[in-house]
Image (cartoon, rainbow, N blue to C red):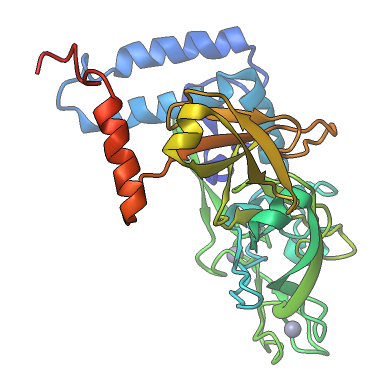
Length: 376
Ligand SMILES: [Zn+2]
Ligand SMILES: [Zn+2]
């Protein structure tokens, strides 16, 4: 989902001068008229017109597209952003790095609020259940584990609702005071004719409430952090960069809301022998000139650790790739890719006397030059 911060702040319907109930056709008509009138070509050196042209285009980008419009309407129906839910901290452990996702927090706050309108005058503390934030963690995996699958764990530090104040931020025995300016909403509306903006309430800093005696445990934020270890089952065949979603393993919800999700991004370490090409494994194997010229049966390693024998046909050039069926990566459907063996002719550098004699004899017996036809 491509929810953006501006969606909370901008009324795209007002910018295009149409009601929220307008049809797609009405929206397009309104956009075309405005775009024609405000187009920079028609208004050279008019900065105000250019700004409005940009605003109109941005609005049409969203509500001109029925799918995005639906998302936008949903976002707007949930009300202004809350100030709750900060990012988590970093924590080093088992080679795992962790960053809380900013967008995850945003979505976590947003979609955790489905049970109320978001405009209730009681402010953040009259809310229904809130979904916890989505979190991200990085996991570094050995190549073999990525191919075979593994159960491991990630360590992370994530926020939890402060146990001492139950997340209110107010010292035990006290309650937060609702901001009179914004009546707890945290935002004020500015209507400037054609445009309508919401801006954070300056009186309360967007929190909607004042806390006269902050909770000492969380210094009034209502949130504290704690290290956690989360078990992760990595499926066989996971790819480098692939995100694994662990439902409900993100930050805990507030007021009995559901937890967010944890997205584990997998980083696969390189293997000294094997590489990966989609569902196939790759390996490069040295062969001698004699094996390439005369043909040979050679042993090649597999990811399982056993060796398989493959036939090098006579006259095989360096760089040719041969295929061992079904010794690659096992896919989700149980099918298995191949092992792609690339042969590379190894040129000897330290010749014994008898090797030198043999190669000189070969050269003497070789008719013509391989560079004939190059015109040199
Ligand atoms: Zn607290
Ligand atoms: Zn306020």
